[in-house]
Image (cartoon, rainbow, N blue to C red; front, side, top):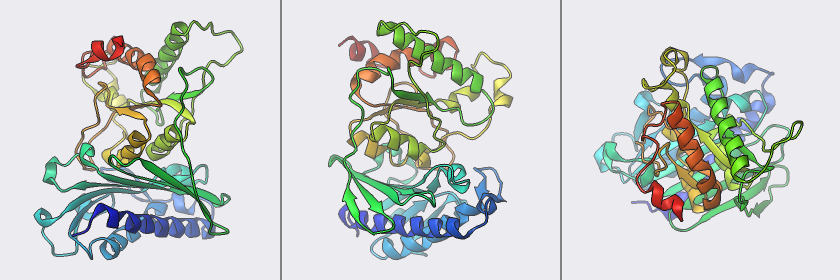
Length: 359
C-alpha cells in the first residue's frame, strides 16, 4: 500500500525527470523536428515530442510508484489508454487510479512558443465510475522553453491547500512560490478569455466573449470608449497553462466551451460537421484540484462542480473564475449567452442559481 503523502514526492520526481528529458531533447533537436507527426489516429495527434515523455511515463511510474502498490495508469499513448502496474496485477486490486498528461501544451512547446506542462491527478480506484471529483492529489510541473531558466511546479492534496515552487535550471536552487488568484471585483483591465484554439466555430465563441465583456462593462457602469481596451484575452493553448494563469493571478475568467458547439440543438445547422474537432478532455483538467485549493471556482457549463470520468474520450466544457465576486458577475452573463444560442445544456439556470446569485 502507498499513501498520498508517500506518492507526492515520487510523482514530483517523475515529473522532474520527464521535464529534464524533454528540455534536453528540445535543446538538441533541429527546428521543427519535434513537431513531426508520428501518429494521427482517432485521438489527439501525437507528435515526436510526445513520444519522449510517453516512453518515460510508464517506466517511471512502474519504478517509483507501482513498486509499493497496484495502480491503474491512464494516459494517451498507452495501449487501450491504460496500463495496470506492476505488470500482471489485476485492475480490481489497484488502490489508485492515476490520470496523467505527460505534455499538456505540446503544440506551444514543440515550436518553442510557450511552456508546456506535465499533469497528474490521483484518485482512489472506484473502477469505471472514478471521476475528476474523486481526485485527492494533483501535481503539475512546467516544461520550460530552452531559453527559459526558471520553471514552476504546483501540487495540492484535497483539503490541505496548494503549494508551489520555482526551480532554477542553471543553479539548481528551489524557492517556495506564493501564487495568489486575483482579488479583483470585475474584469476591467484584466485578462479573461473563452478558448477558441482551432478552426470551426470560432466566430460563435468570439461573439460569446464579446457579449459577456460588453455586458460586464455595462453592469459595472463603464462606457467602453473607441480606441480603448476594456479587458484583454490570452489564448494559451494548454489547459494546465490556463489553470496556472488563474492560480497565479494573471487571468480573472476563463472558459472552454468547445464541446457545446457540437450539440445537435445548436442554432447553426452546419456546426456538427464544422466543429467536430479537438476538445478539452479529463486528462487536461486532472490538476484542477490545485486551482480549487487556491480558491479558484471551477465549474462545468451549468455552474456545477466538474464530475467526469477518468478516461481519454470525454469532451469537457468548463469555466474558471478567479473569485466568487467575479463568478457572480460573469456566470449569469455566460449562461444567458449560451441560452440565446441554444447551446446551454442546463436550460440556462442550474439548480440553486437564483439563491446563489441573489446574495
